[in-house]
Length: 332
Image (cartoon, rainbow, N blue to C red; front, side, top):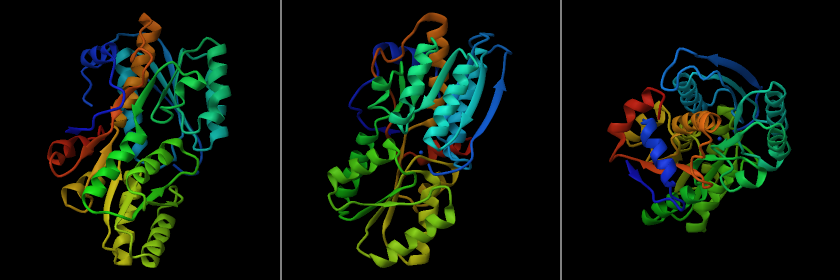
């Protein structure tokens, strides 16, 4: 895979941990969900007995989060921990879910920080209760400010900039950047990164929880403005909606996306999507849980005070054949 040089490299301790672990590897409105996965059969860490809560801003039905959860569940199995997973895309509801985990006296909490200001009080409440909390997926620039111990995810500003560089090199001048969840710092950073390189970038807000609404909004925009030469979607399901909108509008724009699912990976192989910028969500889920296990068991700090980067990386025609099987297996 063709990796993008990150602004902050993994610390030596984090690299060692990743080597030791042999790792193989964002959204709108909707209802909250909670579930528990228990595995004390052993695995790499034996039966630790730890209870770890994972709280995300997942919109139900977004396939991206299946990979986050698959990685977290594998980490729980490998460490003999119990994983409690809960999600709500509404910031206030996510804060309540973190408080519920605190009240349940879990051993550790891993949470996304898509709306860090709204979650700051809950993160502080975890610290006050003596419960270690790590951030992942969203909030790379804010996680230390709100009090999270560690962070696992992509540098989204850098990701957007590198996408913009490839668009500019191909002659693109008027990209349309599609934001599917209002207020998400990660999504806004991606579009800002593209715009920093291609000043003609235009943003459009859509409801990522409603595929038909996304298609209709993009179709109307593309018909109204044929000068749009690139579409930048910020999630694989939105990329598939964009393909429908492009067909229905007759747009000749080129499509790139962030993140992967099996269908988007196949579309890259088929030449319908030029490339994806992958943040490796399976790894994010795995490392978030495993970092809490190592912190609780041995006082380890993966990253040594710096974010541990899981991306960004390009997935395109040059490496899709190697990556497609993993996408189909729900680990990439």
